[in-house]
Length: 223
Image 1 (cartoon, rainbow, N blue to C red):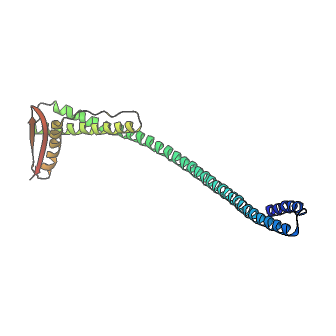
Image 2 (cartoon, rainbow, N blue to C red):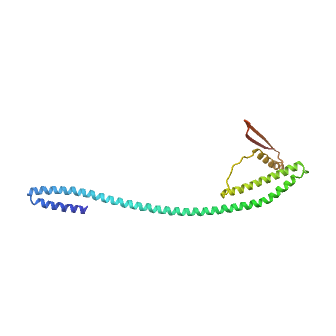
Image 3 (cartoon, rainbow, N blue to C red):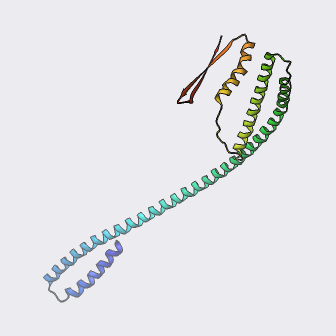
């Protein structure tokens, strides 16, 4: 602003000197007053322009500082994301290693369990072929065989679950024979209740609608 004011004063003074030389004293005073008013107006305009220039410079400076701050925060966030991604990758590798170890453990345990189960199932089949056994013994051996087959099915389910987790097997839905399932459960529970002096009684109710099985309800009761 000071520089602009000095330039304006110099220019107006040169013009004023050139004009006042040909005028009288009163006209010179009037011209001086006019030039002073013009100078005041131009100084006001110069002050406004200077203020706008300073304001623009400060705004640009603040914008640059804000941009630098945001860039710094972005760099820190990118660095934090990189550290998090590395930690997640390491955790994923540990989880995959643990999952593989679990799969190997389940496979080994299933093999160890199948060996005695095969013996139990084999002897039960041999006993069931003996026609001299009393009916009560035959029924007991049948329950042992069914329980062993059920346990084999559970082991196969564990192996299937391990294969599914490893992505080597797809799960397929299949119909379930609810009638046989309830019968097997009842036959397995009944000897346990009788061993404790309890009478196990259960009834089955089937509801048909339009010639098709609609619902199967099983009711069990201990005395």
